[in-house]
Image 1: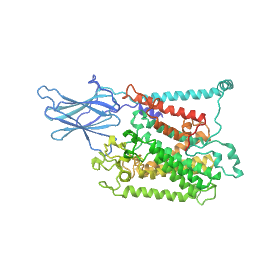
Image 2: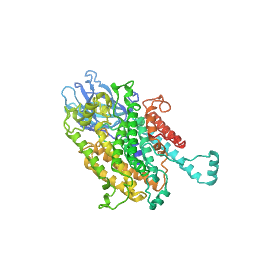
Image 3: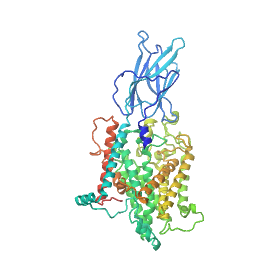
Image 4: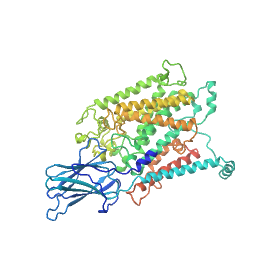
Length: 620
């Protein structure tokens, strides 16, 4: 966290100029700049008497992108010697490479690499240093200092830390008998002493205990839910709500344009992962209590159907195009993919697992004793991954190179503008139709893609199933080792290391140069292994703090984790209603956006807490 705060307070670095001298200076402010999010004003002064200039730029975040034209700067007035001037708005989210060349002869005059600051006012002065040599100088000057747009994050962090400190002090005071007795008399609280299964599993520990008398000690030690699972689910959900509401309009709280990761790219796969973990525990519980496989399969089918139906009818982003109709109905979506992944993983587990399947038996290879009993499931999953690899790299896509994984648009120097997503995009457009998939992918801004592309499309669903299956493996570890905390945590750690090694091999430890880059839009296999690496470590930490040492109750994330479907659907349906959204005084302020988004997210935490206290749990 200290590193994050330090990064947020870091100022943009000095410019690096080529083909002329770089100069960083301060002078009185030039023309006032109307403040716009993630933009700065650049005033380009051309003092060359007989040469018009062409200004182009490319973002450092745009992989293999050609320079894009920004402005033409006419030659200076030869008689008066007055330089011509053109104002240009430049992006401040990532460093930019600026290129100035002659308009008539295309001669490169200078190239500058610089990270502009938000609301800053800059001048780029182009002039001749020497009449004899015609050496051109490009000097970048700060007219008005940029603002630190990250200060609202620091302030919000301090506010929430202050609230946490007050809660801790309150809990310490409650340990004093006179204070506790007085509060109890005043409030007379009713404790929630009964837990119910959440909408995606995570059953009572006692539910999946064997009937062996030797396990009686385990059943009496803890008859409560594994709070770590609900805490993990709630943490993923609250982050998802925050980034869906806008994340303060910061770029790192939005989805990555193509390859790479941001905070927004973490949450959905973590939710899928913990769903898989809960499936393992829930099915084991139902089978131990004598439910028939036919009855359980019926529940799985009904739950999957409801998730898919809710995603298509209730939570559909194509509502913004007008009243929902078949002409513009988006078929894929978050809940649709969640429902389908749940269906496949739960049915697979039900098919090959019976009551007592997690009973400890001697294995020829102890290191694989929580894997080998489930080899049929692994063969099925590996077969799915083989299908994904074959379709991704071998399927012919008209007008695109085979195995293309790029964003199209201006990426790859604009050679494949209509190839967004390669085989994944082609399959969706072919089977679903362009009007029935997501119309504004995250690549449309930076890479200027024109093709619709759905990040929850058909091909990526295969890897979502794999992500849920890895979560299922975490549940099997909990079942297999029961209360052997060290064994459970060591297995989580080993799985995290293995997934991390696979990710490093697939990506070559780089963002864009690996065999299969980390890509949320494609749900690439490296994305799944990386997210599962993080998920195993995060689950290990939460399990240790919440269920082993009980140093943390899981609050406040535990409460939304108990009502995850209600919170997710509710935050989508009521997104544009007060008090979750209101008219801003300054829509170009990160601080105001962050305040609104954090307020809305906090309200859903409070709502889930109230529902928990009233024992209201919505499950499907």
